[in-house]
Each structure stands twice: as structure tokens, then as C-alpha cells.
Image 1 (cartoon, rainbow, N blue to C red):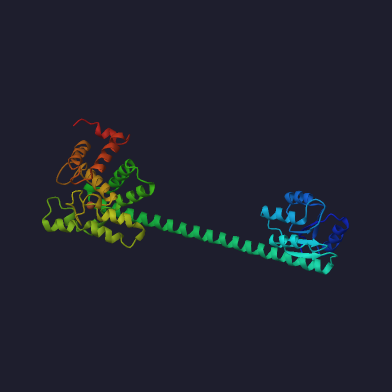
Image 2: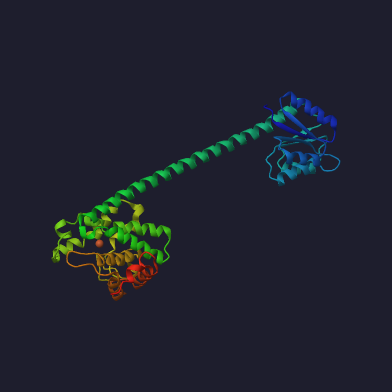
Length: 350
Ligand SMILES: [Fe+2]
């Protein structure tokens, strides 16, 4: 035994003293209570490791103390002492989970055996609880390490993809910053539409990567200053599928991949690669399509000068329900007009 505390509850001082003597001899710390009321107060002050209580006492019985302990959901083992067998009280004490019964007069060896058995059950339960706690904390920390590692990988991967996107923009001096602009405008539109933070993050990534498939388009087509032949245009039209293919091994980027694949679909069904129409086109792809067109129109191209933002918005408006989703055209117009950053570019007189 190792200094655990036993609370002895008995109205007879003589019994309490005997128990104190026997239990102290096996290195237990003993406290005494002469009634159930006193025992309750002592338990509330400091929890003993074990209670040994007489049943029959002048005011409240030992069974009432046991019942109170169970109501409070205290996990203290409880040994009942009794001078005679009261069937009803004994049955109730058993139902309430008394650890054992000691018949009076009490033999020292029987007392020590009952106490040792009750305390070892408690110790085992405590060890099990500690083990479970430590297992849980180990699992939590492993889970956190795993999540941190995934986040780290995703960040690294996103950074790699961004540098790909920058490399694509850098191939063509005319489309310099195009992907970054499309990402920025798409997030502005997404926010205007009340999209969630997760969706906006996905949109930002999709905006940056929407033309990643152009990495596979030969430069003589991509950078051709004049009009493309039909065959050349067919090759260029392969870039959304090519982009989706490049990103395909990344299942976590499913929504980004879909946005990339369908960013050249048109709302009226005349786009590519699938000729999807209206709501069949994923929302992110519809947003990117509008922002892609706006940025393309407002930057210089080899074959024409940049249009003013006002003219570009007019063209977007003319294509409401045609090339573009009217809800998204409305959103970009509203977002630009109400934004501190963008509103000044629309105040220039045409
Ligand atoms: Fe594109």
C-alpha cells in the first residue's frame, strides 16, 4: 500500500480506532467520520481513495452515503460494514455497486484483503485511464503532425504551380500578369457573389492555373502575331484539357481541375471543349471565363491595343446570356463600381 487515504465512517469511536490501527499498519492514511453528514463534508473537501462505512447509524445509514456518492458520480470504492444482515439494505448496497461486505466483528486479515482488492481495482482503472489519455494525446499529436505535413506539402505544391503559372505568363510579353489578374478579378467576383472562403481560395488557385495547359502549346502558335489558321486554333483549343491532365494526379484539386477544364465553355453552349451550356458549366469556370475576357480585352495584344475598362464591361454586357452568365457579368460590374481599388478606372470619360 502506498499512503492512499481511507475514510472510515462509523458512529462507534471504538470501531473507528480499531480500523485506524489496522489500516495505518499497512501504510494507509486513515480519516474518521462519526456520521454520514460529517463524511459528506469531508468528501467534498478532499476525495478519499476508499470509503469503509457502517450501515446502521443513528441518523442516515451507510447506504444513504453510498447512494449520494453514486448520484455525484464519484468513482470511490465503497466497503460496507455490518453487524447483521439486513436483506433489503444489503440488496440496495449491491445495486449501488458496493465493493464488498465486512461482517462485524471484523477480522484484521479480512479487512486488509477487502481493502487491498478494492484499491487494486481502482489503481488498475487509473492506470487504464492514464494509458488511454496518453494514447489519445499521442494520436492527437500524430494527427496534427500529419495535418501540418499535408499543409506544408500543399503550400509547397501550390508555390510550384504558381511558378508554372508565372512561367506561362512570362512566355508572352503581352499576357504578362494575365493569370494573376484573372485570379484577382475572379476572387473579387466570387466575393461579390457571397462565396465561402474555401471557394474563394479554390477560385484564386484556378484563376492562376486556368491556362497552365498552354505550357504544352508550341510557341509558334501561342505567340503568333497574326490570325491563327484553323489547325493552329484547334491545337490552341486543346489547352484546357491539357491543363486538366497536368493537374489530374492531384485529387484534392478536383474543383480547380474542373474550372481549368471548362474555362472556355460559353454560356450559350458554343464554347469548348464540351459545348456545355448555362448551369452545366461549373460556377468557377463561368467566373474565370468572364474575368479572362475582361483582362484580355483591357491589355495590349499583338493585333490590337487595350480597350478601356468601360468598353470592356460594355462588351461583357452585350454578351449577357450569350458568351457569359448574366449573373456573373452583373457581379463583376457591381464589384468594380463599388470597389475603392477598381472604381477609379471606370470614372474615365469615354
Ligand atoms: Fe485559356
